[in-house]
Image (cartoon, rainbow, N blue to C red):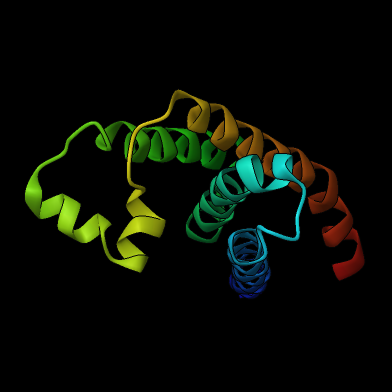
Length: 138
């Protein structure tokens, strides 16, 4: 029973982190005129990659961290490469706010770098803080 409670607690923590990252990502777009150019160009996609990593942690909470890392990279790269496909039906989905945020609009190589940075930083932070959370729990 304790393992299930801990897994649920971790899912809630990772879910909250996801929400925080989503808010930060939306703010990086909404306040782009007030932020430095480097931040507005790169942080949104890095935060998107970070959100993907933490969503995979919600789903794979009982698995090793590197598994979420690999799945996050594959998912993010898959979404980016899917932008090379420009059929009318998917472009109409991309034209919506939610569709554009999830599927993106057009393929850019630099986005792969941004996603990788966001996912790698999230993985590193997760590796660093996860043992500390378990010590606090006991």
